[in-house]
Length: 615
Image (cartoon, rainbow, N blue to C red; front, side):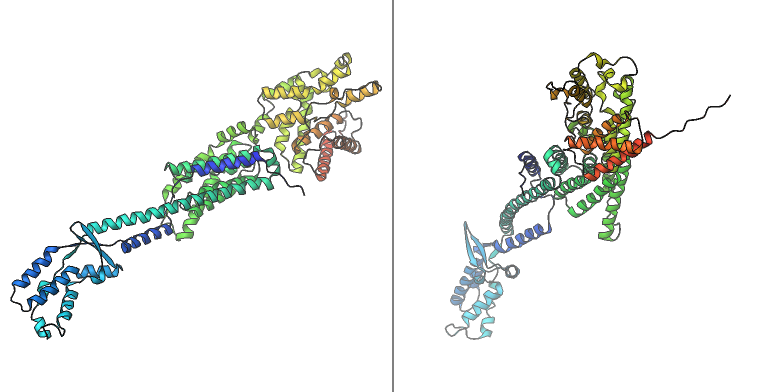
């Protein structure tokens, strides 16, 4: 199997689009996740545990209390004074501060003495009660003069034990805040790198999936490039619009009319591509929503409603009707989500209804946007086709007045081809309109075409066969010039260019070969300067044009005669390779032949002769 090669140009479209979306994507998270809140809370706890509290050593407290003891009438002053100095040197703190240190698992503290700050273990610090017990245990041993509890208690040393370590909450809090800030900064930096990496991975993945949709599922679009670029441009346009809404803190994204995406793509391309483009767009936009599930579900329902309701945009009123369906879909889906989540409407936000109404207004007035896209990309909508098929338009009115026979022929071709298009599920409106204009180039020399010559001499009798062939084949380039002058859409111009393909002006070609069998013939003179049909619609016009014209030369309009004519012309076009590029199946060919036969039988049906009244 031959592997398809990547088209670098199409690939570049997606790379540029992805880079643009990533560049404009909000640099910070739009919403805070519960996981991030837990991280911050953990950082606060870690900060409290890791930052050492600060205590100030009050030196005067020890001096005052020891001097008070010396001036008292207590006994054993030398031994007790030494013990008081020891406990005050280590430090005595308030019992509530000590309990707080234990609860927060703080194992050391800062003790500030003058301009110096030292770290001390909490286990070496006393409370008034533990200091009292420490002195008691020391004095009541075999080497000290105090031998009984009664004698020790009589000293009443509690009067001389008080806190000399005072907690400085301001410095402690500042240290904790600085520590917390550093931890949160590390978390933020780590999360920011992770966030950016996640954005790049998700957006790149979605762009890759969208690329492969065209690469594998829409090969003709991929080869043509224009349809791929159009779909990608629409998607990127709405994604960038969403990014700007978040970046500039504008209104809610629910006022952005995402339903326009499937509507526009459906009108110009097809339903499946419309759904794929819309899903790709809202998937990226949901990354910026605080409630991605609600957003995606609501947009998917609206997408399906818009595609099913607006099958063909043949009238502007259909877009307005579709807008009402979209508004109803938004409101019902929002109500359903509220009931699913809460069971009632207690959390109903009326502002959301206002957003839906604004969205509805944008969709309702989307026709100018559709018209602009139509002109930029050379597409053609059914509304434009209906307008072009108006026989009172300037070009068709000129054709009917200048070339009445050609105009009638075009009407018949339109009828034949549109019926066949409906049968094989092509675009009948496009075929109908294209048929009306396919022979418009005959306006330049109407008298040289037999259907426009009522009476008088044949002008071809006065010129050579080569000149006659040139005039006949020249109606194709002349028609293209007229179409360009009237600013016809490229799709209509293509019908003019392909309705003869690269076939020959058979009448003059065969006449020349019969008349001058030994004379070399210049094939190019008798060949139409056009292109072979490459769509089902243009192929139908080629077949219908030849069959309708040839049917007028028949003497017998029986079913067998018409069937033989149809088979001969279509089989001849296939044999000449004129339909080689048209995406038609054998089944399509059989169906087209049958439709042509039925329509020609209805046109050339037998009519009874009305009797005249006897006098």
